[in-house]
Length: 206
Image (tube, rainbow, N blue to C red; front, side, top):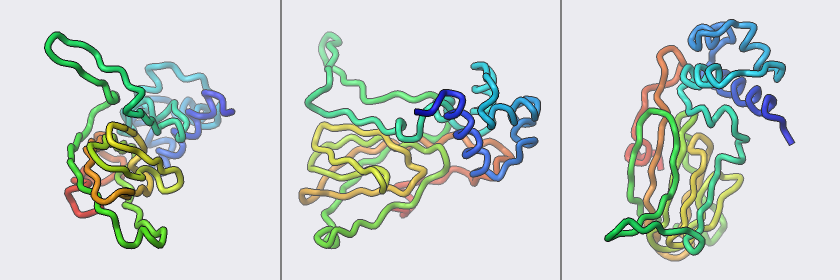
């Protein structure tokens, strides 16, 4: 199992390299000494909370992206296991919460059962900008969704959060399915080499 320092080191280095940033440039944008950042990426540093937030801000991602194992980013919530909270005249169910700033997109998506599914072939969707998360709630039907290498099967009432910056799939397993998708795209920092935020599901990329 990876240690906390190893996880942070790997995530920071990966995000920095994905943006085409040198150690010196990321250190400058984060207001840190280059040696401090170098030690951190080697797993030898012991970063403070302020340091992690500074790096996350410079990379344009929530600080949770620096401290979580990549496989821990996916969260599944089954409809028959949730707790509804009473609020006087109504009940509410919390699906998820994230920290950070950026663009939040909301979609209701109809997923049709593709004829190619009979052959087991599902065309993956293109990755969104680095740091993007997708939050998907199944309104009706049964679906297989998520990263290509680790999709999950969900039914009406189920919820999942997964990384949208990796190839991912949307497949209906029972005729047409209806899902609600919230896409959170991190705020892009000037000089990171990333492009401006664009619409995801509304841009024909799926």
